[in-house]
Length: 170
Image 1: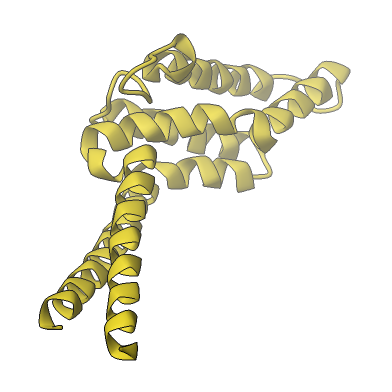
Image 2: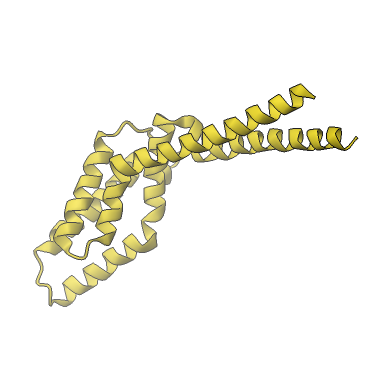
């Protein structure tokens, strides 16, 4: 009876520790890199958007990252470098738009395109950049590994809970 309860406690503690580490690592990414993307989304002026996008690009360039957001099946779409180049094109576009007349049709069209990119189209790009960072810095907490590891821990936990309940009911 003592061993199943001990295994139950150990698997529960591991689940709690792993979840806590996931939260800590997510905070680390947000603090070092991700916050600049969020701030650029919240900014209402082009100069502020450009400032935060530039900080985001700089922090990504300085970060230690993997070449792809994949361990296998590497493609240009999950390449860190290709996604960073797409982000730099957005940065350059913001710089170009800054010099335009705010009342012009060209300016309004460009703003709509950038807003559209920020409101969803860019999420896969940001996800790939984040994934490449996770693979290099904390591979055990990368999306797929996190799901697999937590599934294993919770399965062990539930098996031992079931076992303990059956022992108690006997």
